[in-house]
Image (cartoon, rainbow over all chains, first blue to last red; front, side):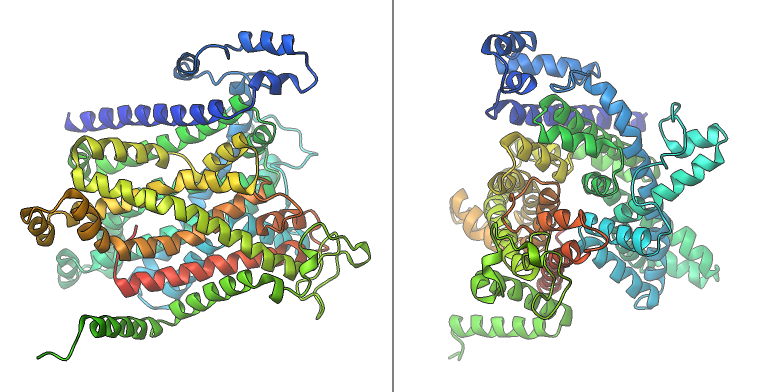
Length: 341
Length: 291
């Protein structure tokens, strides 16, 4: 019951954060000079046409009324219409979001698959080869712009070694419609198209590495330091004294509590991961939300920009919601702490 | 009769700190890298081999020259010396850092002090606001703001400053919340000190080490995000030599003329690495937690 309260409270708070975000972004988008109606029609349109469109778009209403309309739409999941394409932002987002989601999920899986073991080994064998490797990876990942890693990978694996494709999501000669989940890897498996699956994996490798580089290091360092903290606890000493094998002590007694801080930070780190996804997508010509968002930004397409920002924010808030709910389940102390803050 | 004066004490403390700092090779290397970047940027017209290549200079006979003694980083698609442009590009990067952190840090620190010291509704309002700002990738938000204001260097600096304060607010908030029950604060209160005195004379000085470590580490991140913005075409506009812009325009000529984006990219990496090593060194030296 207490757990249910925790989840509900956390859920409500997510809604508040998203509403706050929508106010901030709406204010920024609407307060700046520039008439959206004029942008939609172009500089050559007559003033009467612009005025007519302003009325149609509801732009002559006071700002709070405009916001209320926008927020009303948001609550029903309506992101409005793109000023330039006149298409609904929802359908644009629906088309581009799965590609971004696939990239981000692959990145999280890769970052955990490499970062966790690296952190465990670095923490278990302090100042060993693993520890120094982890240190190097972490520093390199933090100080190298993700678009630069992406370019280096493109240059090395794509052009010099010529082992992997450098752009896009799928080779142009393959006909395939990802129409179930939108995720190529899953849809191709469902359809039994192993050729498509293999091709999609090959396209996914470089962008995923470029995007994961920063996160791998973060996860490794965090896991390392919490492993070291936990290893000083009495119960670890006790389990050693009882003669429990090192393997079990390390992976069961030490790794599980160490995972909690890692997961918390991973949730917050997710924001920079999403931001970097924009850059990596641009380098690899990945047909995700980034290319859509950047185009919208360059053309001052406010509704599309706001749509992209809101969906990104929603994605981030959802991930953190999942992280918190998981943590609250794993570690009951967090539920109580959550209710105090 | 003691032989020490406050002045001598302070001098000794500084010397001790410098001694401890020198024993950390990574931090010393970081400091050297940061100093190098600052010196090179300040004296750019004297240091750069071809200062005239910075603006809209064009020399098509020399375009895409590979690295050589004359052009250590090669030349770009307009025949301009890339090393000279990188050196001037550092000016932009450092301007960005100084502007963004110069605005965001004092503001963020002030809000953190208020939230941490007063608590109650002040804390609720301020901290919930930072939560909202945390819920959005800084780069994406900066993109949206810069775009809304039209893409120029000044606007990208404004956008980053608007987004950066909340990290300092959170950090100072947690620091102050733990400091405010210290005895010296209680003592100041009992002695009838004003809130202003307690905030700025008692609490703020004790946040200085946290702030300086965080700000040093942040300098690297500001450059990182700023480079991302200009990589997407939202920073300083050509022909101004911006490192991120140089990487992206050089990328059009990959893989044949790789030096066009690799050297500016390495130059970005160099600065961020410098600030990070220095920041980590300071953190160990001052023994503070900034995460």
